[in-house]
Every structure is written in structure tokens, then in C-alpha cells.
Image (cartoon, rainbow over all chains, first blue to last red; front, side):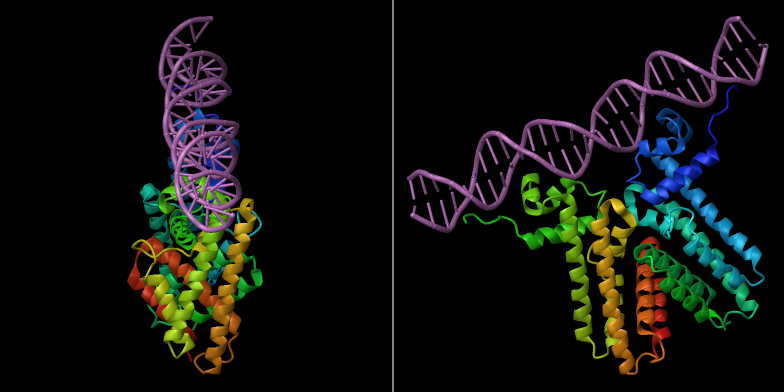
Length: 194
Length: 194
DNA sequence: CCTGAACTTGATCACTCGATCAACTTCAAC
DNA sequence: GTTGAAGTTGATCGAGTGATCAAGTTCAGG
């Protein structure tokens, strides 16, 4: 089997993710993608099948990045709750692209797409669910460690945090008011600490 | 001045809003609009100028509807906090269109559009700010009435509620889990009640 | 009746979209 | 060096886009 692809698949997916994340699925044209990843249409379609398939890869990559950042922050803190707090800070205030905070790509996907793209929606929903479970495990451990009130339902606490993160990212992207979001973030965590 | 428009402007704006809200700005074609409001392109452009101008009207109408619902719920409850709670319930669980809850149109606008549509963004941001101020006034009154802890900053409480509403609407639209959102909503209000 | 401005219509414009494909290039295997 | 499959290229496809406009329709004022 001669000749290997001239492009780096992971690099291409990463660049496509950044563009899709920024502009959304519909507003990103295949021409935009061609320029961003420096590939011609034939190569892109040979490698990924369709615009939708490439978006699916980008979405998978996004979810994987988020999990990676969470793991990283958990490893940096002895306390799971501190690690989670640090993850929220990272996601809100140290954006991967652009200046202002970006809305979660999973939420953006679900907000933009209808049932005409049911597979992409299902994929985004599954990733959101995975994140919620990760949060729930962290809260449960924090209860064992005595950081969170043991009477609270860990799933409800985790869900509330996820909803607040979603809201804060939207709010921050809209207003750009970092001070306000800082308060919102600190309040959210101080409420669940014992 | 002979001959008056055959269409009802408010009705047309309302129908356009429903379509724009459901599909988003970019995914709504002028043909879709023509069918939805039963007008031909020339009439629409004569009456509204452009797709963007019509969206602006739809956005204004949306914000006006939301304010109207809030006023309505406040009038129905002696307690401002109860009225606000009722408003949240209405917005989350009694959607204007479709079955599942819809994401806030203001947030959807800000999530979808880039600085290429700066005016629409600015309009959405202004409407969000107006809602936050309305919430803040309600919280302030609730503090006077002894329903909310007087030590809390009313703006921060209002902002937190708004962020949680944004998050809950996104979460509900994604998961469809009404029970979970009910808990989130009740928790959000029970946290600020004295 | 007419007149004529307001309004409506549907064909049409220039353009962009996602996707395709025949022609071309590359290079491991022999 | 030759082969041939993998990979690449850019022109191109048909469909759909937002917007325009000449022609047609409507109806209050005279």
C-alpha cells in the first residue's frame, strides 16, 4: 500500500473543530474548511466522507479535549472539588480560541441543529451525559472527603453545576463581564461546600 | 393614500419570529419565510427591508412577549418572588412552539451570530440586560418584603437566576428531562428564599 | 366611471452551497 | 524502471441562497 496521506489527521480535525466551534455547522462552508485545513475538496471528502462526518469527528475531538482538561485539573489538586472548580475556571476564562469565552460546542450544536441532524444531536447529548457523570463521581468523592454535604443528592448537585456552567458560558459570551461571572462561579461552588 | 396592506403586520412578525426562533437566522431561508407568512418576496422586502431587518423585528417582538409574560405572572401573584418563580415555570414548561422547551431566542441569536451581524447581537444583549434589570427590581422588592435575605446583593441574585434559567432551558432542550429541570428550578429558588 | 400611487406578484439575477469526478501525481513493491 | 493503487487537484455540477424589478392588481379620491 503505497503513498500515505500528506496531511496529519489529528491536526486537520483540530483545525476543523476550531472553525466549526467558532462559526457553527451551517455557517461553516466547505470552502472555509478547505482553507483552514489546507486541503482540496477531493481529499477532504476522501478522508472524512462529508461535512457532517467531519463535524462528528470535530465534536468527538471537542469532548475528548474537555475530558482531558478535567483530568489535568483533577490531577493538579488534592481536593476533587478544587479540581472541578479549577476546571470551570479554565473553561470559562482561558478560552482555546478567540478572546472572549466561547459557548460549549456541545450546547452550540444542540442549539443550532434540528432533528434533520439527529446523529450529531445524539452524539452531543451523549457527551453532555458523560460529563454529567464525571461531575457526579467527583461530587460523590467530595462527600466522602467531607467537602460537600452528605445529605445532598450528588447527581442533583452535579447537574446544577453543569447547568450553571452552561449558563455562565452563554452569559459570559454575551456580556463579556468577567467580574460578574467570577462572582457567579464562586457563589456556585461556595453554595455546595460544607 | 389608497389601498392598505393586505397583510397584518403584527401577525406576520409573530409568524416570522416562530420560524426564526425554531430554525435560527441562517437556516431560515427567505422561501421558508414566504411560505410561513404567506407573502411574496417583493411584499416582504417592501414591508421589512431585508431578512436581517425582519429578524430584528422578530427579536423585538420576542423580548416584548417575554416581558409581557413576566408582567402577567407578577400580576397573578401577591409575592414578587412567587411571580418570578411562576414566570420561570411558564418559560420552561409551557413552550410557545413545539413540544420540548425552547432555548431563549436571545441566547440563540448570540450563540449563532458573529460580529458580522453586530446590530442583531447588540439588540439581543440589550434585551438580556433589560430582563436582568427587571429580575433585579423583583429581588429588591422581595428583600423589602422579607422573602429574600437582605444581605445578598440583589443584582448578583438576579444574575444568578438568569444564568440558571439560560442553563436550564439549554439543558431541558438537550435532555428533555422534565423531572430533573423541576428539581433544578425548585432548588434555585429555595436557595434564595429566607 | 377614471387616475395613479400603493401594493403584490413571480420570474429572474448573481452568487454560494455541498458534493463529485476525470485527470494527474506520488511512491512502495516488485 | 515499471506498475498500480492511494492520494490529490481544480473545474464543475445542480440546487438553493438573498434580493431585485418590471409587469400586473387594487382601490380611495376626483
